[in-house]
Length: 168
Image (cartoon, rainbow, N blue to C red):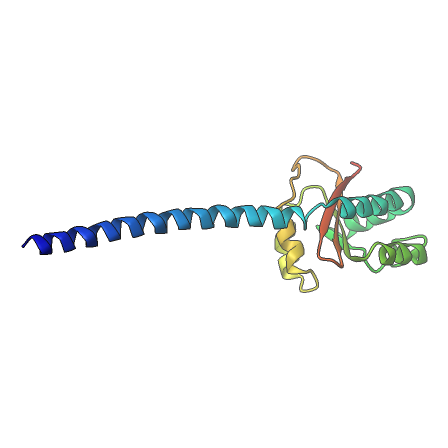
C-alpha cells in the first residue's frame, strides 16, 4: 500500500513540475517574440540611412516640385500619389529625379496627406503597393487635424521611412 501512494505522489509531483516548466517556457517565448519583433521593426522602419535618404527626397521636392505634386494630389481627390516614376507632369527635372531615386535605392515613393487614416484601405486595394508598406502604416504616428503632407518611402533593402512635409 505504501508503494502505491508513493507512485501517486511522484506522478503528481511530475505533473506539477512539468506544468511549471511549460508555463515558464511559454512566458519566455512570448517575451522573446515581442523583443524580436521590436528588434525587426527597429531595423526596418525609419533607420538612420533611410531617414537621411528620405530627407534628401523631401528637400528636392520642397525646393522644386512641391506645388505641382500637392496640386495633383488635391485635383485627383486621392489619399496618395505614387511619384516613383518621376513623370514630367509632376517634376520639372524628371531625369534628376530618376537619378536621385536610383542612387538612393528607392523602390517606391508615396506622397500622401498627413492624415493617413484611410490610406491603409486604399493601399490594400492597390496591387502595386507592397504588403510591407501597408504594414508600415501601422507604425506611423500622425495628426488627424494637420493639413500637411507626408512622404512614405520604400527602399530596395525592404526598409521604410516617412517624413512630414510642410502644411498648407
